[in-house]
Structure formats: C-alpha cells, structure tokens
Image 1: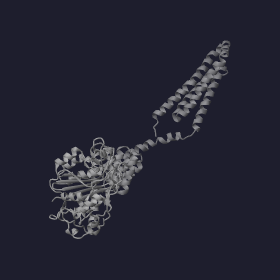
Image 2 (image 1 turned 90 degrees about the vertical axis):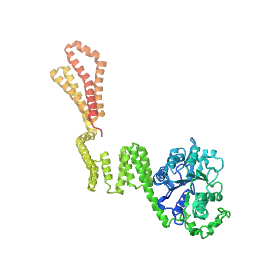
Image 3 (image 1 turned 120 degrees about the vertical axis):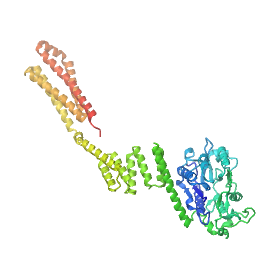
Image 4 (image 1 turned 180 degrees about the vertical axis):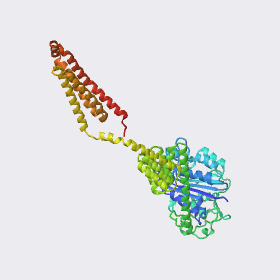
Length: 582
C-alpha cells in the first residue's frame, strides 16, 4: 500500500546576518505539519511526517533526512512531499541555486543545500513514484536581483541543467513561491504566511474535487493562482505524469458541511473553483490551522513521532562519525558529533565518541571532562569507566586510574580489554614508583637554598688561601719544599673537586663562583707581571736558587686559573646530560 511521506522544514533565524530574520517561516512549517497529521485535516500517518525547524534545521541534518527519506524509506508507489520555508540564494560564481539552512553562510556554498545535486543524486535515484518539493522562499542575494525577469521570478533558483533534468525525469516537481525579496516583505494572514494560509484553506476543502473528494496538486494549483497575488503565486517546474493526491477520499465530508463566518469573511467573494460556489470550512478545521493548537491526540502522536525520527537521525549521524573515524578524518567526525550534541546534549554514545576523538588528538584533559559527564549520566557504563582509567593514566594519575578500572571490574561486565588496561596501569604505576625513589634526593638538593652555595664558595676561598700560603713557603725556603708543594697540590685538588661536584649539583650558579676563582688567579698573575716583573728578575739574579720555586708558584697559579673551571664545566655538562627533567 502506497504511503505519503513528508519532510517539513522551517527556519526564521540564521547564523549569517546576510539572511534577514523571518517572521512566518517556522509557523508555516508547524501549521502544515499539524494539518497533515490531523484527523480532521490531511489524515497522514504521524510516523510518516517529520518536522525540523529553528536552530535544529542545519544543513547536515536536513541533508541526512532528505537522503534517508528519498533513498531508504520511500518505496515504489510512495509519494514524498518536501516543504521548505526560509531563505534561498544563488551562488555568485556558478549561478546554482541553494536553500539556506540555520547554519548556512552565504559565501560558503558547502553550508547550503545544493538543489542541482539534490535533484541528480537523490531525486533521480529515489524509488518513490512522486516527489513534490514546495519551496516557499525568501529570495536573497545580488545575483538573484539581476537575474530575475519579473519582480518575484523564481526561475533563477533553477539552473538550466536542473530545469532540464526535472522535465526529463517526470513526477519530480519543484513548486516555488516568493515569500519575499529585497523589494517585497513577507505577508501574513491569521499569524501564518499568506501562501501557507491559502494553501491550507484549499486543502481543507476549497480545492476538493466534488467527484472523488480528493485534493490533488492539479486542483490546488488553480485555486492558489486565483487567490494569491503575484508575489506568492506559485510556479511549477517539472512534468507531472499522474496526480499527486495530497488529500484522499478519506477526508471527512463533515469538514465542508458548516460555514465559518470568521474564515469566510477573510476570503474574497470571487474565490471559486470551476464555477462552483466556494465551500466553507468548519470552526474545528480553522482551529487546526493555528500553530498554537497542539493539545490534540494527533498532536501528541506527532510529537512522539518527531522525537523518534530525531533519535533515528542522531543514530545515522553517529554512524557517519564512526565512518569518518575509520577513514582517518577526525576533523569531519568531530564536527558531526558536535552537531549531534547540540541536538541531543545528553546522548551517551555521542559523548563517548567525542571523548575518543579528543583523546586521539591528544587532548586528554578535555576528553576526561567529557567522560566524567558520561559517568554522571550512566554510572554503570563500563566503557566510560575504562576510558576514564586510560585518560587518568595518560595524565600520570595512576592511583586514581587504578581505582577507576577496579570500579569497572566491580560492575561485573568484564572483558579482556578491561584486564589489559588494569595490567598496563599497574605496570606504569610500578615504574613511576621506582623512578620516584631517586627523585627526593635530587629535589632536596634543589631545595637546600643558598647555604650550600655559600659553603662551596667558602671552601674555594680557603683552598685558594692554602695554596697561596704554600707558594709563599716555597719561596721563603723556611720549610721543606715537599711540604709547600703538598699544600699547593692539596689546594688545587680541592678546588677542582669542589668545582665539579658543585656545578653538577647546583648548576650554572655554582659555576659562577668557579669563574670567580679563575678571575682571581688570572688577576694575580697579571698584577705580578705588571708591577713586580722587574723586581722579580732582580731577585732571581741575586738569588739564582729561587728560580725553580718561582716557576712552581707561577705554574700553580696558572693551573688554578684553568683546571677548576674545566672541572666545573665537565660537572655541569654531565648533570644536564644525565639528570631527568620533571
């Protein structure tokens, strides 16, 4: 048995300021959807009608819904109705027509619904017997303004290629109405758009065929053409090979039996179809035209059906996320999962996929925050606890990670992966604890403060003083030369060892003190050469026996200026090469 399937979309507000806010688009979409499923209206099955409006009507979701409806759900013999109320525009480079969804940007064609692609890839391959697209659009853009041949011309929206494709396919129809443009604003009646109001009036009975009690597109079009001004008057593109029955013979005749003064007074007296008197619509039917009328049995069924379809579409988008992840396209996957979370912020599956994407990109802290949200929503989710343990381990919080994996095991749903995660965490914890045994000593050395540095500098000064005393004793010959040489050697050894260990432990700051000893020794040689060179030569001529001790003293000063500095640099380099960074 053939079905009538509907996708109704309405957008008032746009992220791009190029598209001005609309007043009636969402109300029109809601009114049509409610009328279609109402038992006193179109009597369509509520599960076969989908309504998407406002910020939820993004390009990604609408495109996915269209694809699923036309290529997956629709079967041979089914009739598909797509209604769009919002902005439409033309690409200024290609001239192709686009529908603007809530997240569409005028200068980014990738964010709009490309009509030519829709016709070629979806409409042409659908098994549906009939596809009717009603575009009640606000005409936006400079190119549209210069391309139209009349004030409200809808033809520029369809390129020549698209128009030719529609003509060849058959039963693939575009019905276009001008909601407004740069020279004409929206027009409304009874708090909905004028086109939609007159369309609902026609569907409710004024366009009914007296013989078949049906409302077909062939009957509705003449009614709309005779009761709408040039701006809203629809134009049909494509070839209709058999009638599209919008309302079947199951429509209750009681709708037409009683007149509605309020509605009748708002219609022009010339509103007739094929010379027949204009039938009137009952007050009950008029109430169903109001967007605020939702407290009916069919309204509740419709809301339930919409929620069910929304869940199905979220699942479809999540499947696309997994496919993008398998194809190593994390950017597109993350963009899609973020959209799903805008629609369903508490969707556990979407949150887990987001956490996995963030973890794969190295954003462990952000991924952990998402996993914490999952744990709050679903405390018994083993996968979430496993992910929490892995992320905490990556952040170095091994004890908390071990507690998380233990909790996962306590939930009773154990698997090899959970045990593997636990073993890895325990191994990392053991390694960290082993490394930390050596860390307190090093950290303590860094926290000793300035006292060790001053102590090392004092040792250097004392050693230099002892060496200088040894040199004096060697020159005075008042003590055995071996004792004086021993003092010099010991002082030199202390200076070298103290310089190396100090630079290794305290770094460059300690190396500065060693440089001070070098400067002091070099300065002593320079002073002796500048002010005592002549006197030393005179003494050596008088006392030749002092030549060898003098050379030893000079050699000691030279070694003091070189060897401690070299030792300190070696200690500093070894420390930088071997000391761990934390």
